[in-house]
Every structure is written in structure tokens, then in C-alpha cells.
Image 1 (cartoon, rainbow, N blue to C red):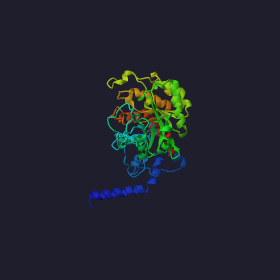
Image 2 (cartoon, one colour):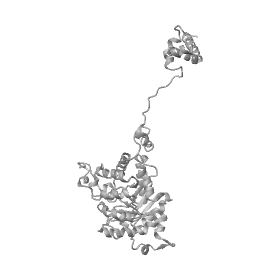
Image 3 (cartoon, helix red, strand yellow):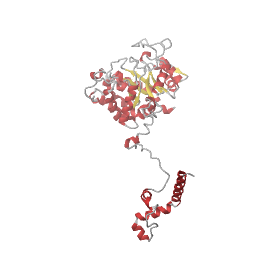
Image 4 (cartoon, rainbow, N blue to C red):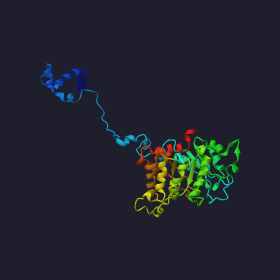
Length: 405
């Protein structure tokens, strides 16, 4: 045996002896650091003179002989609100530390509350009163391809104005999708609905549509302008509300924000849920019209005609607002003025806002909706840890009667 091996053997035996008697040695060495306890108990120190054992007393006093530890850097602690939000941010980072793709950061089972399907005119002719001709078709297959890019697979199909009261395209799309992942909002003339559609197997046409997943009727007073005074508007809304009330449907309005003061006096008496398209379609100041000229000062939403009345409607509880179509309101790519409105809407009506892409962005084809979706997530994070879950999923499920199926 060489000198090195012999030395290792002696060291191992010495270590074994220490481990074998470590409990006794620990008690003995502790007695040196606690003289009052030793005196009171009458214990006598085990070792009086310095020895090989007492020379390592400081090491023993700091910690007993134990297997060596591997020291790792301490991970940062999650404190305060970060801990509260940890569940909502579970997809925020990837393994490499970078932010996860946008679809992975949206709540599971999210809903897109506003898309249009426009098939080939040879299959579904346009209305003779259509106010524009689409540049191309946007088929159901195209819509499904779009949902794969957003990660939002539940959709609400909205009747395009170019089809008038012929809902055939929308209804056929609902039949293909099924009511578990799709809802529909139709258009019809309240005065002639029975004459035009008749009865289906003894059930009213509305009942038949309801079984397919229809949950609302839309009145478009912007793309197809109608000059109505407050009395005429009230009579029209009550006429539609009376038809849909028993089905629990939504009265969806594409209407200008300037009309909100009139709506504030009408909606509470309708007895149905009302949903306002595209952030209630405000008229923003000219400074929002140019992407190269952002607002010189923050927008005060309450300066907009109709905005205070909109807040009042939200607070009363039966009115919902779609957070959608920002490009219809402003050319600002940073959404400064739109964001100012959305933040205030989240404060006043967090349970009555729903997200929508407005695909295929009619008259704004080619728009990338991802930046707006990203902005919505940011506004949600500012408002409340649960706001994203509300905006993208829960509010839509309540509005469109999703849990009923």
C-alpha cells in the first residue's frame, strides 16, 4: 500500500470514528459554549486539554457533521400581487425565458364574439340592397383557419349586412360547427318575420334557429343608416325585444355612441340583454386619425358625446360592450385613445365586456389583429388579475348562453 492510499485509509477511519460518536461529541462540545448550563447541571467537560477533537470545535459548533450540501442560487421569491396572479400567468414564459406565443397566453376556451362568414355569391347571393361588394369571399374554411392562428376556437357568427335578412349562410355555418363551439346572431324584419319564414314543423322559426345556436338579433344602424328620433328608436327596440325575450336572446346594436343618452332611457325597460358593437362606436377626435400623429394629450373618455351614458348603462347591468374593431375608430397603432376608453369600461363594467376580432375586418381586410389582442391582455392585467378570464371567456359564456348546452 502506497503512502497516499494509507493516508486516505487513516482519514476514512478517523471520519468513521467521528460519525460513530457524533451525538456524544456534540453534547460535549455544546457544554463548552454553555457554561452556566454545565455548572447548573453538574456536568463535567469531557475534554479539558486541547486535542485533535477540540481543535475542530468551531466547525462542530456551526453545524454537525452531515453529508456535504450542494449550494444552489436561491430562486427569486414571488411576492404580493405576483403570487396572486401566478395562475393567470402560467403560460407567460417559455423554457428559454422568452414570452410564450400569444395564443398560449389567452384563457382556455376563449370566445371570439364577432366574426362574419361570406361565401361565394353563386352559393349565397348578396342582397339587392347591399351597400358594398366584398372584394373576395371569406368562407367558413377561411374562418376556421383564422381561429387556428388566434387560438380562439369558439366563435359567434354575425349576420353580414350584405345578406340582408337572408340568414342562410350563417345558419348553414352553424349546422357545420355545432352549438357547442358556435353561436349566431341573425337579422330579420320584426314586422314580417312570420310571413317571410313561416313555421317549421309546428315550431316558430325563432325556436328552430335557437336549437341551431342562434342567440341574438342584430340591428345595424351604421352600415345601413336610419334616421330615428328617440321615440321611433324606442318603438323599434321594444318590437324586437318582445319577439326574442322568451328565448333569452341578445338585442345586438351597431349604433353610434351619440345615441347612448337615448338608449339609457330605453334599455332598462326592454327586459332583454343588449350588446353594443365595436366599443359602442364613438366618434374620436381627429388626432386619432393619423398613425404618425399620436395624441398630444391623453383622451378623457368622458369628453366623448355619449360616453357618460354608456357608463351608466354598464353599471345598470343589462348592457354589454364588444371590445372590437379599433381600426374602425382610430388609425393609431398604439391604441392610445381606444385604450383610454377600454380601461374606463373595465372599471365600470368588468362583467359585461366581451372580446371580438371582427374578422375578416370588412373594408379593412388584411389587418393584423394580434397587436390589438396583445393590448387587450395588457389592459386586463392593469385592471384585475381575473379580467382576462372575464373578457375572453366568462362574460361571453354568460352573454351567449353557452352553459345551457
